Every structure is written in C-alpha cells, then in structure tokens.
Image (tube, rainbow, N blue to C red):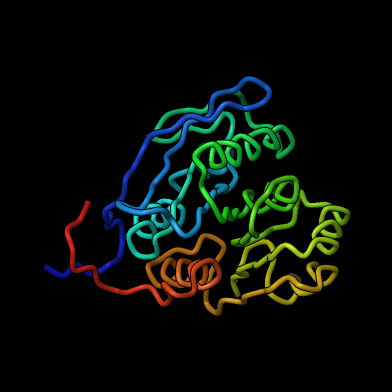
Length: 241
C-alpha cells in the first residue's frame, strides 16, 4: 500500500528515549531516531526554537525530520529539550538561560552522539536554535551547520567572524516573509562569512507552516547532507511505524 508523505505521517525507525547529562549537572530529555537497519550516513542534532515562545523538541519541522529522514534518507535525528523546556517526552532540568547556559546543552548533545559512534554530525538550528548553533557549534567536531530562520538577535559580530575564519560548511534558509530577518537584511548580516550559502525561500514564513514549507526544508537539508537521497519521495510504499 502506498502512503502519501505529509502531515504527521511517521515512517519506520528505531526510536529511543534518551537523556543527556550536562557538564553543570542537569538532565535533559530527548529522542534518537535511527534507520531501521545499517549505519546512518549522517546525524542531525536539532536545536529547537525559543522555549519561552513555544519552541521545543517537537516543533513541527524537527518532529517531521525525525518522522521521515531515518527511513527516506538514512539519516539519524537527535532531538532534545534544552534546559527548562517541556514536551510530551518530559521536562528537562534547569531553567531557560537566555542562550548562555545552553552552551552546556549543545555540548551534551554532541557528546552523546559521539558516545554512540554516530558519524557526520550536523547541527540543525531553528530560530533560537540558530543562535546556539552560531555561538557554540564551532566548539565541537561537527561536519557543518544548517540554520532555519536565523534571527541573529543573540549572535555577536565576533561569533559571526569566527565562522568566517573557519571553513566548516554553513547554510541558512531565509524565509521571504520572515518576522525577524528577511533575505536582503540576511545578505548584509551574513556578508562577513564568505562561504555561507544563503537559500532564500519564496513565500515562506518564520514558522515554515504547511506541508509545502516542510517539504522544502527537508529537501534542502537532505540535499546538503546526503544529496544522493534528494529529492525526497512524496509517497512511501512500505509499512508505517
């Protein structure tokens, strides 16, 4: 039976509830979704939008990445709630740290992925998660980073210049109708980083609402990380999870 891939369809994966332990003693809750068989070609660590405005590990693009990419692109997806954030999976210890103490959260997630011998690790930050990516991503052994709707509110010029000095791949998806950073401004703000790839998405908004936006984001992510699996299919002929 063939199933159209849309909405909250969940494709087969090995899903495991996980906990991360931070260097400052907190326990964070999360999930690791792995391909059903074989080793993943890459690993995505997701960093969710602002928790004080409803962001969490189940924010829809991140949840759909975990629902689809292990099966469609052989990519592992690690999601977690940053400190003080709640979701159906549970509540992480601590309290919101304005993007500062979350440095430990990013480190804990990368360390966990390394402890599982996961390879080709990419950070996928969305909104507030892009700030964590830009602030702390270069501290870790990652393959590169992808930014969704970066607001650049908490990212300093020095942090941007650090990426300019580092050849690690950096991609940013900029919605045409973003609430915080539209394409023209993004081109100016990211100009110090000569190798950044800005992907302007016509018609899209900050929250990437709708299946068309979801598909565009996931297609772009897979094209960057595992181009042989792109474009993603629109139908699934196997069993569902």
